[in-house]
Amino acid sequence: MKYQLKYRRFGPHSILIEWPSIIDRNVLNDVLNYKNSIIDLYIKEKVEIINTYNSILVDYDNTIDKINDEIFKLKQIYSSLNSEDKQQKTLWEIPTCYDDEFGIDLEDISIAKKMSKSEIIELHSNTIYDVYFIGFLPGFLYLGGLDERLYFNRKSIPNLNVKRGSVAIGGQQTGIYPQNSPGGWHILGNSPVNFFNSEDPKPCFVKAGDMIKFVPISKHDYMDILKLSRENLYQPKSTLVYD
Amino acid sequence: MIKVIKSGFYSTIQDEGRLGYRNTGVPLCGAMDKSSYHMSNHLLGNSIDDATLEITMLGPELLFDVDTFIVIAGADISPVLNDMPIVNNRIIAVNKGDTLKFRNLKSGFRAYLAVKGGFKTETKLGSRSSYQTITNQNVIAKGDELLIEEYKEHATEPSYSKLKTLDFKSKVLEVYEGPEFQFLSELQREQLFSEDFIIGQLYSRMAYQVKPLIKNDLPSILTGPVLPGTVQLTSSGQLIILMRDCQTTGGYPRVLQLSENAINLLSQKKERDSVRFQLIHY
Image (cartoon, rainbow over all chains, first blue to last red; front, side):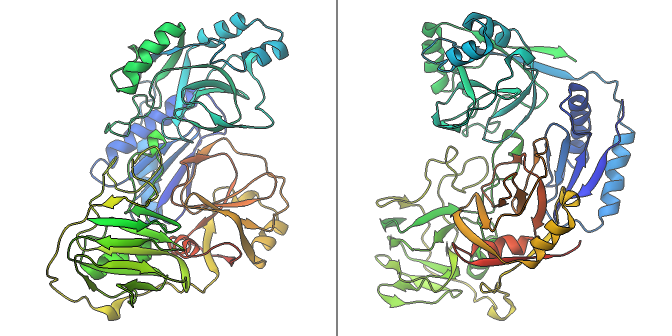
């Protein structure tokens, strides 16, 4: 399916392309399909292409001289896209320990939702989530697909220090804190996986379009994986899927 | 090598920035006032993207253990070499054992210390720019050692006459319409362009917040891309001007976008300074 896209200039050296303002996996697939073609177009130039749920930002190295020509070029690529192409995606299994020691807010969610902790864990870990993009912090994944029954408002007073690896729910989203940081989401557990390594030229092993699944693990396994992970020796299990 | 004897207030190594990693959530970073940063490198005959030390408000005390040449550009923090005053925007020969200090802040807010050949501190993801969680070295501290190369001779004098420097006293920030500008009411637009805005207590390499508030009932947007220089308007009416270390995406309406020069100029402002937005078109 093709969408009515909006093209607008955003600052002297960027063009913003926008889809309808919704979180939707068909939009995601269209965004990524288009993004990959734009990357190919500018492969030899210093142009950075960034996507979010419903936008692509094409950020040029210099001030854009002929904006209409550039937009025309981009529109041509879009109209020649073959949206039927299946995309190859990676499904990552993210080991997560939901023990009380890590899931410090499980109790609160359980009371508010009138669900047992194990029901919450099951709902959370039985879903396959889409990675829409990575933003906010280095290695922070914006995930779509949280079960409605787990929607839960952010805390009114944020925690000043949410522990690295915390797996949490905020509103209609779920995510993993890639580093210690302040945050207002409710914490269900902790993953020992390292989502960002600045020593690696590909600092985050996940990319937009990939999928992830949380796999419950014991505290014992958590400690084992954490040791490897801190040495950057742990790579989560992955499978290729065509979507 | 340069040894840090006293840290000063807040100095970090900065270069052109960390290009090409925003898809993993990595901020661009880089020198806040690019025009002064470029100037310091240009005058020394360095590559335009060599790493410099960005010095904020109160300068450090630095001991050189090699001969080299330096240029300081940007804010005037009354630099002294071995207790003799030196001036900005001039090539200064430094000898092994010399000490560089700074006294009072006379103009601007951020100075750039360029050394010949550039600072050779760690490179992470294609850049030497400091950023917590990416680089090991962040704000410089007493006892730190910053790697530089030795130079005994300097080839050519640059032509000083061609240089254009920013007028740090100007309070006019040129802005373009941001993606959500169209949703602002007439009243909001009038307020944006007729009032002076004062820099509040929260201002850093990440963002500057300015007062007064703008009465606002625009809803949040679906999290979208933001850039250094993007002016966000929060639901409480707070204007947040994103700067070089800003996150890559955000959910507040993006009402204005600063020009490059406006970002540079704002970088030279501090708490209680006032600014005024002037709308320009592409």
